[in-house]
Image (cartoon, rainbow, N blue to C red; front, side, top):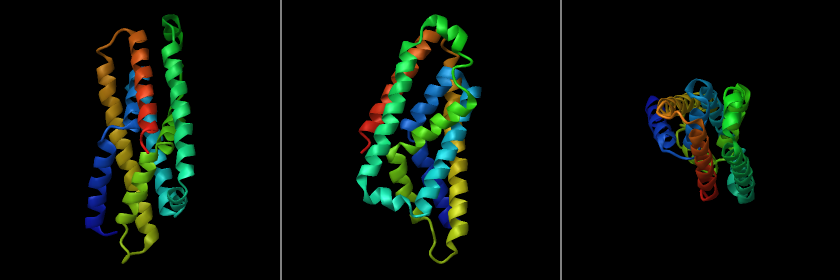
Length: 201
């Protein structure tokens, strides 16, 4: 792949992901709720979600979503419903439940799948992928090797960016001792994520 194009792609993709949005908010919420070590699974989920975006866009399937707007709306409202359900759970937790459920509330698999769901239902992420990937493919070089490299690069950047947000939020969690307050904060973050998704298109 053209080195200059790849370098520009890295810079562009990093800055796109680093700007706070629904994915970042979800990462922070998981870290506040479960701690940075356990919530690191969410970063893996976002990396996998990024990989799915790459496959969809670079295989040409993404053009269908771009052509038929109803597909994006269905995906978006499915994601909003899921996140509002998570917010409801966070708001309804009682202090006694936090003692028994804090460690076992979510498995690694559930955290990964939750992050994938948020990533894949975030229309801004899908649209950004549709705009970014094609711009960094050189027509002078074989397509498949470039597509694979761009996908792997994007997944690596995603893992680093969301993993960093999770670690930072994990450090902030140590400032709180009140688990009920943390649960309420998480609920508010989830609601903000849902609102951000609702107004994203």
